[in-house]
Every structure is written in C-alpha cells, then in structure tokens.
Image (cartoon, rainbow, N blue to C red):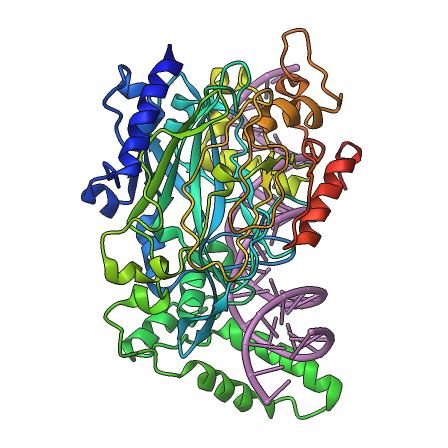
Length: 534
DNA sequence: TCGCCTACCACCTTTGAACCGT
DNA sequence: AACGGTTCAAAGGTGGTAGGCG
C-alpha cells in the first residue's frame, strides 16, 4: 500500500523534475541552514514521509565563516577529521520509523584548484575521482525519535588522500572542491536497508563545501581552525590578546603565537644544530621575517565584496540541494522527490560555467553501482565517541536494541569518473539504485565513462549480500532462525564488533581510470572474508 | 625551481580505567 | 555490593615545519 503511494509520488516528482520542477524549499529555510525535502501532496501520511524530514545544520554560523574564507579540509594518509564537524538537528521524522544516516562527499565540480594570490583559482581539470565512499553514522538504524532526540554528529568522519585506504575513510583528491551530502534512509523492518521500497532523501548544505588540501593554504582558514577547534588550542596565542591585538592593528596575517615561535625555534634549532652546530639564535629574525613575508601579502583584492566567490571561484552551489528518491521493485530507478541538479540554477551568470562544461557528477550513492565494505578498525568505525556527542548513549534502549546493527559500516562505491574531454555530455540525472539483490537493475554505462556494464552492486546489494555475508563472521550467507543476518543480532552488552566485508561485489569488465584503486578494491572483495583486523 | 606531500613534533582534548568515599 | 565522583595515564586530534619527491 505504501509502495503504491510511493509510486504515485515518484511519478509526480519525476514529472516535476522533467519540467524543471522547483523545490519547496523556502528562502528562509535556506538562510537558516535548514534543509528539507519537498512536501508530497499526494501522500496520505504527510508527517511520516521521509520527504518531510527537516535537517538543520548545527553551527551554521561557524560553517559560514569558513565558507566565506574558503573552507579547507586537511586530508592525510591516516585520515583527518573534518572541522567544523558535520552535525545536524533532525525534525519531522516518524518517531517510530527506523532510519539510517549516511554522508558522502562528492566532487563539487571538475576542476583542480591552486591557491594563488590569496585566493583559490582553477588550475586545470580534476583528477579522476576517488572511489566514492559512504560514511554511515555509527549508531545502528534507530527510530526517528532517537535521531531527533539530540544532535546527530558525524565528527568522526575522516578524510584521506590514500587511494588504498583500508580504513574506510572517505577518499579525496587534494586541491579539489567537494560537497558533503547527508542521506537519510528509511530502514526496512525486515531488511533494514535497501529493500524493495527503500526510501531516502538527500540534504546538502552549501556551506559545507570545501577544498581538500594536505596543508592549509589560506591563513584565514588556519586561524579559524585554531580559534575554534579545541584540539588546536596549543596553537592559540598563549596570551589572550594576541589575536585581538592583530585585529586592532588591522593585520590580516596571523599573529605568531608563542607556541608557533617556540616550535619554529625548536625546529630551527634542531635543524641548524645538526647542520651548523652553532648560531641558533641567528636564525630567529630570519624565521620571523620569513613568516611575515609569507603572510604579509595584502589580502584585499579587487573582488573582495564577494568573499565567497573570491575564495571559491565558480561556486555553483545553490543554497540547498536536496534529492528524494524512492526505488521501485521493478528495477527502474525513479525519483521521488524533486531534485535540483547542478545545472538547475537561478542565475545564468554564476552558473554559466556549468552549462558550458556540464560535469557528470552523478551521485555515487544514487547513480553508480555499489560495492560494500564493512569496516573493521576502530578508527574506521569511529563509534563510541559519537554516542557521547550525539547522546545516543542515553537513547532509549528500545530505539537501538531491536535495530539491525550495521554499525561501523562504510559503503564504498566505485564511481566511474567521466573521462576528460567530455564537454557536451549532457548532465546525467541522479538515479536511485536502491535495489533488492534479487532485482538487479540494468546498469546503463555512463556515457562518459569507460566502465563496462557490470552487475549491480548497490545499496540493495549491501543489504542483501553484504550484510548477509560479509558482515557476519559466519560468512557466507548464513541467517539465523529469524531470517535476519547474524550481524543483526549481537549479544546484549557486547561491544559492537567491527566487521569488514569486501566480498559482496565483484566487477566485470574494466575501468580504465583509477584502475589501480579500483582493482585494489576488487582485490579486497575477493579476499574480503579473510580480512582480519590489524 | 616550484608545488605538493609526508613524517614528525609538541601541545592539547578526550576517553576510560582505577581508585576512593559514601 | 553498588553507585557516583575524582584522578590520571593513554590515546588520539591539532597545526607547524623540514625535507622529500616529481
């Protein structure tokens, strides 16, 4: 019954999309950092539709500060957290319905950037995209009441530039612009996720877009991080007046705190001591003057009236993007809610670029075959601390205990990145790929990718294959008497054991780009059941 | 030569076990 | 014995830096 309604709704929204449908997002909501899926007039249960869920970005003002300066996120081989961390407040959920929350990070455009003259500039075409990965909130599928009870934090999400990252961190390319997206997935009672009628919606906050870097380029960002990140307290001026003085003096460059000077002295000392064996102090003025030289470049620029565009050139993010989809059992992927594609904009000027060179940034979640991956390491699972943050530790046991546990899972996608020189390739709308493993949807090869059609391995496969097989130590394919995958049942009080699954997906054909990384993942897939936590 | 990346550093917060008192 | 509060050490996160690499 619900499915029938969904079908109707889906068709309606497809129609709206095809006619350039608008979102129902109010301008005020956008300004307030409120993301909401469009309403669905045809529904008889408006309050229980996933489309009605509203999401408010926590600490939006802080995000905006970073955004205005041009947010940068450090990526390291071992993985680095995002700061500000991604936290949201949810409302409008059905208190009794179970949901799964996921985040992915998708390329915001097809450019590589460089930081030149205190602003970000396009430095060429983007590198081939990393295999898209999903970060699943460590809380198991929980009721809407649970998610709405407190802030939902994704602070333990980590970003890496290690293409072979085994920890399930989100893999990014340095010097590229990315956009995190939040996905809310309705968990099916039986299959938890990815069933025939899985509904989900996607929320995007444009303030959270960032450029990935291996070291900070913009000193404004560095200062903002130091000022706001408690872990960076050590880099704050030991005297409270440092920053204040710098502002009073109208200096745009960062003030050298005592710690910074000390570190430089220590570093210089050790370095010089090793090479010269003497004359340490002689290096001090040099260090300082060098620093001032590096940072003393006037930050003003002719376009300073628009800091966002200055630091994030060619930003095409509308205030909010959101997508609501619902999968239908027949293998077709229909869009349930309305969608604003990157091409769908209000101002031709700011988005001209995208029309000229329409990137084919299909959602890894929505438009590309999935492989699944359950994470074993504690780092990758990143659970536990999250509970403190989100308060899930105090959640009603009922919210969680009966929930299928897919904690610590990271779903990975292999995203065929468009080949270079694809100008003119029409934008490919997102398509939902929530399928049941028994209903494998045909894969339409990406027009710009070299991917050979291969078996669908999407979120539905995650549910049916990965959970059943890889996520359980009793692989393969065993189910308990209740019919649930063993993973769904853990002993009361027992810790959430990390699992890893690389066995759920095998690829046919080849991928010419990012082949190495892809093959790596496939390789893991073939040996996934033998994975042991290190 | 230059830009980017990595390993390492010291400092800081967070976390959880151990301990103690009620 | 159970519970709650405090202490402390280990783990982990942070940006800065030198040096390596292409």
